[in-house]
Length: 143
Image (cartoon, rainbow, N blue to C red; front, side, top):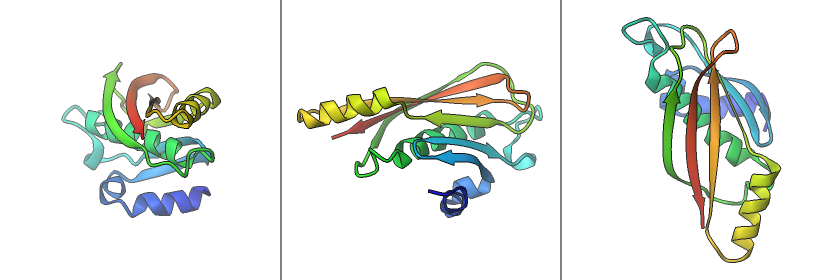
C-alpha cells in the first residue's frame, strides 16, 4: 500500500483523524507514524498526552501486521495491549512497528498445524530527537 493510500485510509478513521496521524513511512509489514502537535494531543504539562502515544503505537502495530504480504489473508484479533512509558514526550513523536520474518514463519507454522497463533508487536515511540519515550505492546490472535 502506498503512503498516500494508507494516509487516506487512516483519515477515514475518526479518532486517528482527530489525532492527525501522519504516515511518515510505509512498506509491507513496516510503518512509521507521527501525529500533529497542538492542544488536541497535549496534556496539562504541555507534553504529548499518554493516550495519544498509546493510540499511535496501537495503530502502528495493526498497520504493520495487516500490511505484511504473507499475512494479509488472515484476520488478526487484538487480544491485549499495554504501554511502558519511559519519559515525557515534548514534541512530535515518531512510532515505528514492523513484523519480522521469524514472526511470520511462526504464525504460518502454527496455523498450518491447525493451531491458533499469537503475535506480539512492539511499537517503539521516540521523540523528535530520536530518544525512546515509550513502547506499546500489542498482542494479536489468529485462529
